[in-house]
Length: 408
Image 1 (cartoon, rainbow, N blue to C red):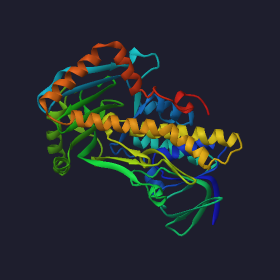
Image 2: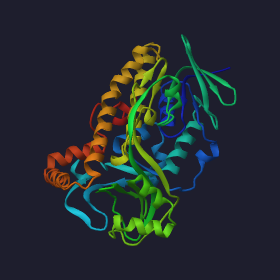
Image 3: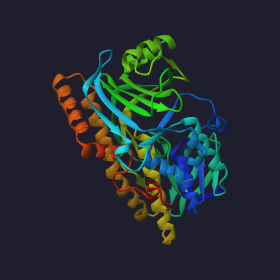
Image 4: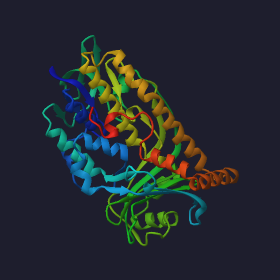
């Protein structure tokens, strides 16, 4: 058995490494177990995946020492335009337009490609003595006792730590082994994800176009490129994904329009089924969940990673403050503070994204009229616009210090 660290983190995506770095900065020793091999995590090939980092999330990335490594590759999101309509018919005349200039904090967020953020997090962990990385290994068993946690890897090796954090996605084995149940449902939708190159500049504008089958997000990347997250009914999405590149673009073009000129694919194409899945508890004995392991939501507002980074900021702050007070950081009293902090926010976000998807992913004429009028009203009232802008930037609610741009 290897007596490794104060905290064991299962999951090497984005939330797990961010948490490891935040904890290491404040005196914790951490072991992170990643199911994927190092070469795959460190690849610099562009595969089309990217993320919308809200301004508050960017502040956390900066505080853990990573933003300086990716800032020159990030695209600021300066405006957001939200419209409603049908494929091939253009948008409704009622819309919402959010301009970052209406608040004093800066851009509402940044688009960053997966390859850059993932590799920067990896490099930062490798340069941190307090973090031990274990690659290409899965956890097959976990045992909790009065003094700590024992994890058994597929290789047969066992690891020992004071507590475990599950950052291992919507099908979290960490949560399942702890007996944490989940609540949720399938939307019958699938997201088609890709990146495109286009003829005309996007000027840092992010677009959300609601159609009866599901929303289409067009998110600005560096240069004349954009990230596409395109939701369709699952059977239709499968048929589109099976098309060749030229036919795929032919299906996208009527939905996308011609406002950015000619378009072409850049990188690979992906699909993933859309569902809502919430862990009934965010904690168990000597255990906490963050990110999709705690709450997998609809991508309608691009808030999945941002919600996960709020978890990271809150958990790191609570564990660090407990350590400074001499408390057992894995005690039920300490972990309950984390659950109380994050429970309402995550449940509210899940309910909001679910309601938005149900409201907009249909062609009911009465609902269409109501939502179009609602968007027109929000777009016309400065105070309401500013509230939505601050929400999009992640600046509302009880923010952890890291997301305020402050050290723990």
